[in-house]
Image 1 (cartoon, rainbow, N blue to C red):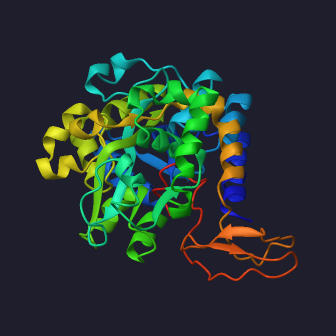
Image 2: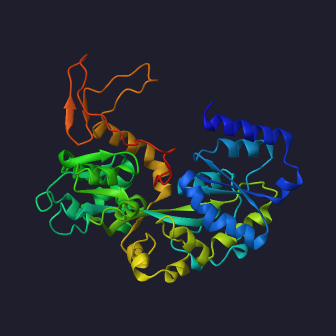
Image 3: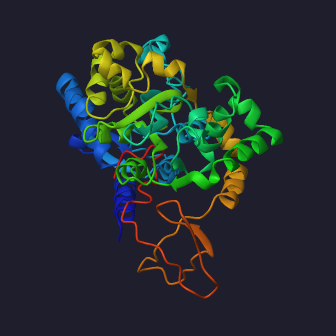
Length: 402
């Protein structure tokens, strides 16, 4: 039985039995992503919140799906009080009534938050970013834009891109000179989509495709590429070991994870107290000191020294040059664009897992060095094994947790 089955069984038991003990009544149940984030959240928020209010926090992790929330809504027995959500789930859940509409008079001024951190059902927990990252030892000069990323004559070598339409199509249009404010207007047209794919055609032979958040840093370290798109959280970790890894923030792409309150929680007053507490600048600072996410409170950045602040996605200078992900666009167009992208991009070579009874390697795929591998029907394909994680998530967009 895997962790999800165990957790679902526990939820079912609580729903059946109710949670009427004195201990449970005094606790706030908060759901978040993954082990590494959960540890940071305990230190930055949960433990200080208990100390400040006397309200203990019981925390669990989840995979970003809504199965449990839907079950609670159906049975009208909500046992989760606060939940971390990505922007897509926040919008879908808000529209379908899974989350409470927020009263910001109980949280704080909307003007204190960065763009994208305030919505009907969610208040920003942190900002994350994807940006151009390069190895300064292997790259002569300083690539400062996605246009430079495309300049293989000036900056020779393999470069990495995430093997999805989302983010990669935006990057292609940024490289082609489209202003950040116009990206989604252009991408919403057939001509704009063709323009993005035409731009990708120009460097297709120079691209190593990556799938999981840790891979760009690993591939740079191994010399498989000289520059790449990458989640800056993972690059911040790599920079502690490798000072040659640099980030260019021009044209970075950012989004916000949020706190939401599940509809029907009997502890809504306590949930609001937590949201207000977690929105305080000093508490957001405690989280960013552990994980290089950007605080959503504008006032938090002034609490850091300038060098530290400049390395966070929500720094003023970084946001001014950034593109905010349009969640509504991807909810509407994501399916068709991912389908086209998947048929355009080469598949990634992989090894057959032991539990895969039916497995067929594609006739053409790209190995971990970005080199094409081909085979005749019925013959095995030759490629070396990659031991890096190729998924890791549900995969939580920015892949913070292992």
